[in-house]
Amino acid sequence: MEAPSFDLVIRGGTVVDGTGAARRRADVGIRDAKIVAIDPDLPPGREEIDATGKLVTPGFVDVHTHYDAQVTWDPHVTPSSWHGVTTVVMGNCGVGFAPAAPDQRKWLISLMEGVEDIPGAAMTEGMIWAWESFPEYLDAIDKHPRAIDICAQVPHGALRAYVMGRRGAKHEAATNEDLAAMARIVREGTEAGALGFSTSRTPIHKGMDGEYVPGTFADERELFAMGRAVAEGGGVMFQMTGNHVDMIEEFPWMRRLAQEAGCSVSFNLLQTDQKPDLWKHMLGLLDEAEKDDLPIWAQVAGRPNGILMTWAGTAVPFMPYPTYMPLHGLPFAERLPRLRDAALRHKVVHEKPFSFGEFEDYIISSFHKMYRLGEVPNYEPEPEHAATEVAKRNGDVAPGVVWDWMMENDGRGVVYFPIFNYAENNLDALRTLLQHPRTRLGLGDGGAHCGAICDASIQTFMLTHWVRDRTRGDKLPLEFIVKTLSSDTASFYGLDDRGRIAIGYKADLNVIDFDAMKLHAPEMIYDLPADGRRFVQRAEGITHTIVSGQIIRQANAPTGKLPGRLVRGPKSAPA
Image 1 (spheres, rainbow, N blue to C red):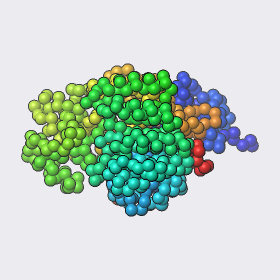
Image 2 (image 1 turned 90 degrees about the vertical axis):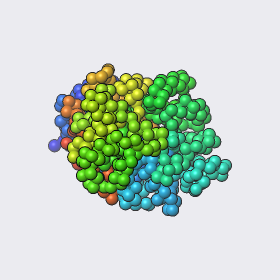
Image 3 (image 1 turned 90 degrees about the horizontal axis):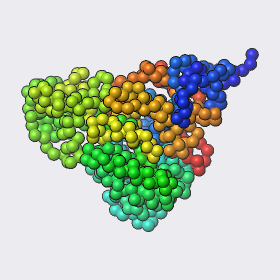
């Protein structure tokens, strides 16, 4: 008997190849972890998937995650792998765990906990430190088996603290010797396989000690030295998380860096309530950069960057209310009986809260933008469903409405506050941002903001909301969204072997029952080390996820296969 021609054949599906080309019916043949044939009638494979009536897409590439600690204990890199993601890029926003002197480990955990809201106890228990230098970190995580591929960047916070010690953490200006040492480490990191360097310049990002991320106030000498070191080491990206309302002021140095350093520059672009039209000006600046052939890109989100408010979470809007404050430190199970007390509710919701600071006050007092998320989550809610409007109709106060929403589902109700990208109470601005040629989808923050944000499900949302379900405005084509999730993000970081269904490309794919796709409501679970909490959002409809030709998920469950690997940059030694 003749041996099968393929290791795996995905048969009879509708191929959406990630290039933006029209969908077509074809079989996909895989051999030796590569796509080797695309044709309507391929010979048998050793293993086959019947994709009749289903979509076949490339695996999705998520370029903005924070799995730097989680990859050391979670082989499935959840929840991203639940949503068709086959490659993630971590080490964003200037935070990470290498380089790290032994006496800095506790501080780096505290920095990550403060900036990214990942439980410190989970990282302390879950990580087994086996590195000091960045190349040693790559080697250490490379040894862990996992289901999907991971990529890393050199984080500015860890780098500055490693070289400058307390001076770096306290934002002193770097000396020439400091700059030379940091540049050497970035160069070594990218030569070893890091795809780039990341930094944070936003006042939102603070460690548990209240200090800003090291590098927040770095001068141009330092930024340019790091950018040049990325290019010299073979990296591709200088990733910067900036202060959203100050991006016009930041853009001139980013232009010069893109022109002089030889690497791409990426920044976050969001619509804010404070400057709701700023994004339009930034798109104009990106148009000028494109005209001048400068590699500057904006990372944009696919839905509002939404804070989830729940009693068991990080963001509880009643934290500054005097009567509630003493209760907040109690375990949820102890608080819940007291929260059911009608007299307590009445007293709290009619109190005047303390001030926690301008940004914090904005979050906890924006009742005109707080919505009941419910069992069928709606990420484009109508203004009349906001807490203030419901309170007017019910003869209540807005804090009381939010209290009652959070008490639903035995005290596990979730209130949604779209903090960014919802200044006009719809997603029309995001639709424009997503379609600009110099924007790329990111900012999902997989692995981070465990107690307040759950946007690692963005891939499923992009397909369900933008392609199929949107009712409050125009939708976006399926082919465009698949390209946005795959080849656009892959090529953004120089991952040119994936993101497309094409001959010779890496066999990372999804088989999707599009009509059955569904996002469940976010839920708080306690599955991190040390029983750490995190919001997750489960989904239905992705029937198979394939990495390097092996099925890693089938019928919403892992298969146990772990073909994922660390992806190293082009100048590094072979993995």
